[in-house]
Length: 175
Length: 254
Image (tube, rainbow over all chains, first blue to last red; front, side):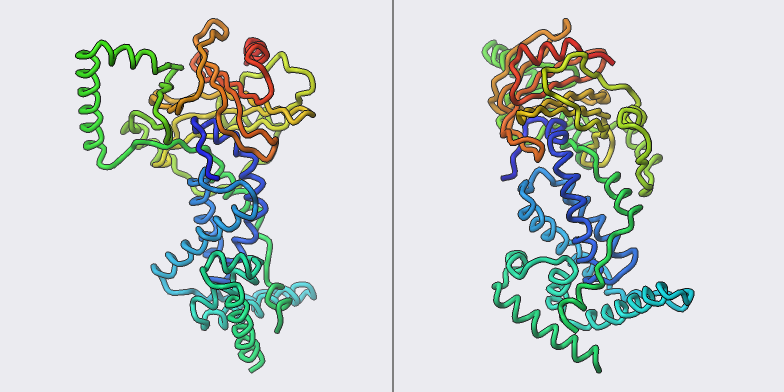
């Protein structure tokens, strides 16, 4: 739709509530996309922030229904991730689990962190395209159809690639 | 390992991060003509002014056309440019650039304390114009302040936005905006504009501006726009007549 209103500050006020709603709905999805894409830690937050800043600067271009906004937002997120990889090598975060206390909940939390660190390591060994699909599917929670729309792959192709990637991850995990 | 295993590592963003990022991005932005190097822009701008001045001086018809097509509301020049973004006619001054650089701050958590009016006044630095009269059924749903920044991230004004809704899906918004001295060219793109007098000041009633909001279903809105006491004021509504909007405008006070 990309309606262009005649007065910018008028437009800004009119879309303020819309963007606030979309921001809170989409932030966790974008954030988790980056956690699965580049690993946990400050980098995921930085790239999430960069994505939303770019989206906000160009917000008059987005469609106002949530599904279209989500697709548009992840188009930006994918570019941000690509730019990041162009600039630097992927980072594998290391969590300081050894510093945690032995409280039962903390042990559970620490185990989860250790598992995610291990998963991140396995993800980092995947082909770039496969890792991106995993991040879109399991990090951001997008459907295969939405992922297909974003990546240009067919929906069935997305399903097949994810299935094979999952099999590969499973065998690595259990090795 | 299965789908459930892979999704269990999702986590909610830190609340401080969420609030800080929202604070950083929730600023209205205005397209700016600021280009680099600024010297080149200044020369180009001067050349355009010279051509325009010569054209107007040489052609009575052009003078008449320009007079008929333009409105001036405070620092806003409403032009008949058919489409495109409004632009800041002048770039930021060296002082504004220096100030923006000196006061650039990292992300900080948003302050969520205080009543909306108190927070908005503290952020904007001035109180908003609020109505003494509201049409039946309208109640306030939002009162927020926001900063206008250009493409270079340099602020050029603060606005306070008061939004009201009615049970019949009616929308009403009142904006009090304090811009800096940089003039803005605002394209009207063929909208119907009626000259009005608001509280003794020249103003315009602009009809059928495209509109989209999750708050109401309207696709178009009308706006009363004028300048008063150094502020640019606007009342926008989708279901109210000019007479009703004028009545609201005349009841505004700080």
